[in-house]
Image 1 (cartoon, rainbow, N blue to C red):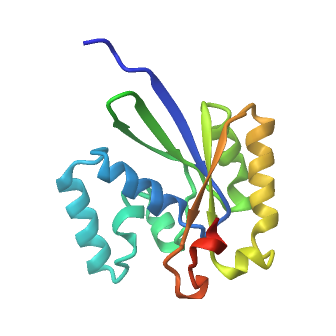
Image 2: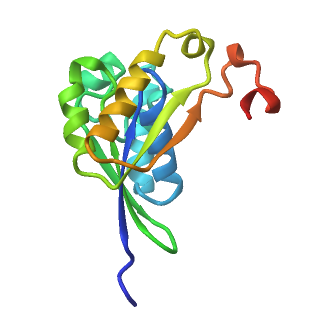
Length: 165
């Protein structure tokens, strides 16, 4: 069987947009993590009173990341589909770790820009950082950037199909 072509993907966005949990969950669903590892992480998150860490902690492995609730060091997960081998790299979103984010974007083929649907984003709270991240990707040579909208289930979003589209 011929080897599948590989695609490296940087998952970028402002802090708190849910990029780590989203990409970790996708990788888990695609078989990128062993079930035992996921069960161990789920149990740890529950024991430490942070059940939301169930997926994100698969990638945020440093104690400091788990305490702060943000990615500090880029981490990778891989999965395979029928057509491609994907390597997803979770990049830090906090401006304090911008150097780590830039080093990741210099290595990838495409980027996924994660944007939260919450009102704070639309009001401009994080939109400036989102623009900075998108510009950094473009500056580092990434010409293909797709947008992944998260937090659609947040009660503050008041989801409607027409608003989303």
